[in-house]
Image (cartoon, rainbow, N blue to C red):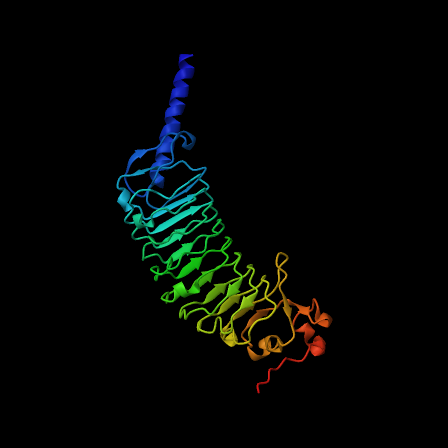
Length: 323
């Protein structure tokens, strides 16, 4: 029995030392303590080592000796319910994916934050008034955001280059609050419940705009005309039946998607859209994904290009005379 007990003790010490070595190797800075307790028996720490990436199956390596040195906090599938409460002046990158975060809280706690990703959580609103002005990318996809962004919510975040809010439940978006966002390169509002697109302000750096998978029924004339650097425009899987011919500088695009999907079978009234069918010829550098026609009946379910021989059934354009 004594020999068996000695063997077990030696094995336990060996496992403990191995765990300590592995934990020390994972840390970037000197730490106050090494955690030897399984994660299931240890409360969720507020902050971990700099650049520590943590998932629900990992055991945190340690608490950092100096919490102000944290530059990256990444936690996925770790049952996190709120963002770190500590004041983290050096935090640059915060990623909290696949957790149960319901509120962003006061983002002023992270004055140097440049990249914020809070995806696959349960956020219902975006109180961004306290967001740091240094923020360059904001990605909050696959949440439950149904409240319209309050006026000016994004106004101070003029350093943004990437804004991604897909797969939420927003019914409208005030594009005018982006008027000073001269660095914005990517805007993704796909798979929300947007119903109308007005005229967007000049966004001189915007290259990619994704409005696919919404409920858009109307697009304003010249809606995208001020986006002089726009190259990719996704309008597929929406409910509009026509598109203004002056909505965008079509030949400056490299990709235009208007195609349908199984969830949202976009169907255009193909009468008076001959200009759209001609785009592959007039704009040879444009990759074009077209939807199918809903009307006239002779062109139903044909692509706009296939329907060109069936558009004789279209009623003549209406004209208005003045006296």
